[in-house]
Length: 219
Ligand SMILES: O=C(CO)[C@@H](O)[C@H](O)COP(=O)(O)O
Image 1 (cartoon, rainbow, N blue to C red):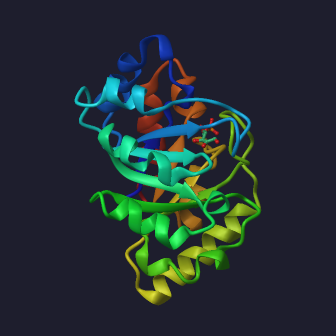
Image 2 (tube, helix red, strand yellow):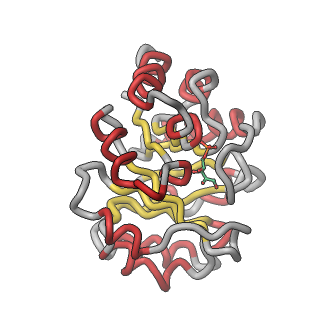
């Protein structure tokens, strides 16, 4: 079963809980929370304060994507804010093995994200430690960008490795995912789709989520 993770980056921040309620009522699996620091990526977005303000007000698990430098410094704060999954970028972590162990020490799921141009083999030594791998299909920093098509090959490559090694690792894909390309991304091997603008910038969020399910359920 493919999981859907709406990215609140494209939600209405003047009424965030209302948008969260809409995706919760539509039955999504994860709430994708994009944390950006203005250093690792050019944009500045959400911090632990925002997580604290929505914690306990939704039952959707928090999938926290840290696009920040020095993530180790803030992991405890995001755990306190209710994170269920914490993803760090391999490009931002000189000691990625230590960072993963740090995340796991709090009893939350650990994931690593790769930018589009970062090869899969950079994960070779840490596969066994991961609950999820996030393949970025845009260069991180902003919602509403176009899907980078060469990432499809990376998804296939990663799916093959995971299946051959018989590992229990989710493949999440994030950036430019729309109703029209969702099936192709799932066929390539992804089992968690992140979508921001495709979900929140529509008039009927429930119908959009139903269409995502329809396109991906029979694959
Ligand atoms: O992490 C990011 C961007 O850096 C994503 O989560 C975007 O927020 C996805 O937005 P869309 O491409 O779906 O609009």
